[in-house]
Image 1 (tube, rainbow, N blue to C red):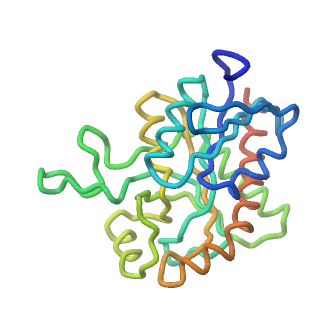
Image 2 (image 1 turned 45 degrees about the horizontal axis):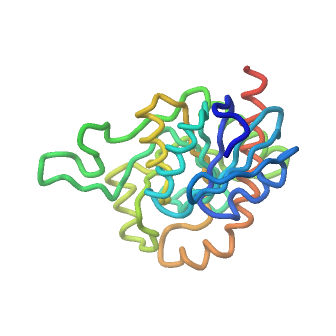
Length: 244
């Protein structure tokens, strides 16, 4: 059980151990507890109290953890990790901050809905403006500090329970949804947060180009991309503290 019944702090979610390992290690006076299948890590880092947790791969896992974090009092949610590029101008190591997020694998078109639209919901959920700007500023600062020329872009995150490794499918995500990148969790977290009115943002670092080479690229660059994402999350949390 958590030390307090209700706590006032942001939460950071990653789908895989590689995506949160560095953030968890950075927590001062860490405390660990479980909520059902999820291990939650609470501590102080980057200027404020924060909870870090791994959801597992896929939209259901992500939504389940997001809901639990909100029940426990999370005041904002940052989803971090890696993604496949959809925008052909993006390269491995580039950072995508969510302008909004869409579930590309939802299809209720026989009932007259646009592809990707969950009935009763918008086609895409917009990220919180303050978190979005903090993420963009943090990503740009991290790139400068590292002497990196990697791009930082604001774009649409397309989520679905599919690992995209096909050039034709990637092109379809670009043309149909105007997506910048694709992954398997973010839009589910966006939907949960939007339903409860809790600010959220997704920060994804490109680990592959979502085409026939995606599987090889993903494994090769996940650790590097996760390290870059951690630097961005550090900057976001520091900026939230400054604005508090």
